[in-house]
Length: 306
Image (cartoon, rainbow, N blue to C red; front, side):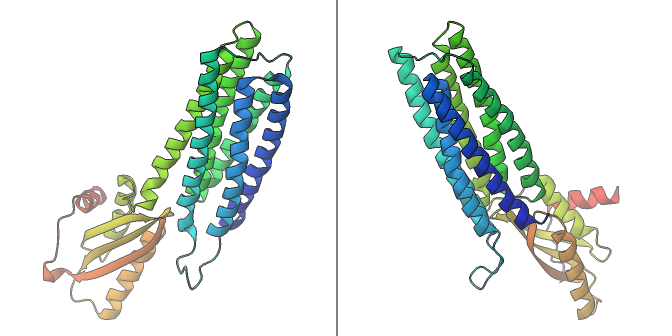
């Protein structure tokens, strides 16, 4: 399945699952009055809201390049992820406020019957499957918004488990476990938002990629048979993708056509790295002595020689 179809399908699957969960949780909450189930219902309602945004955002990010956006629309993705984080913070804050209020006042409704436990167990299992599905698609297609969605679903598994413990404990005669579980749910929700922000800020501010990825980029350039050295390597995120610029040293007796072929080969080698988008290579005649020591390039060259 190509990237466009896979990403759009993920958005629709996430939306459908969250709609199902919010309806079942709201029905059980109305019947049981459990604060833990209610907090999970609010969590799922927030999930529905951000799922709509994800569907719209993924539709925009998978549009082909046009005259206004010649590099495509993938750079919208980090903004979609940050919107997800904002929605998560709001939901977590509301749940935390209600849980702490119940702990302070002692006003706790204990769920009766099996439905509260069953719906939380069902939610946990469903969210685990959704987490695995989103994570696989997000990693295969290098999509930060889908990976962010996967992380949110992972935390939903943990919060559903905490809510399940709270409801079961309350039914066993420890009613305060219900708002305590809701507090744990809220903290888990807020933490997932922090995680998403941390992962996507680097995309927005043009941060450098991980060092092992930079080493891979340098290695692909310096192992070209005509390249004698590499310097001035700059790799940075532009949205979820990486732009690369670097200088390669070659022997000065190459013709212009040969130098052009070397440059094209190096560009192609680096663009084979899935995370890389644009590559700009400047060819320097080695005899000019423009070599500038680059520790990462030197390490990559040493590794290749060994």
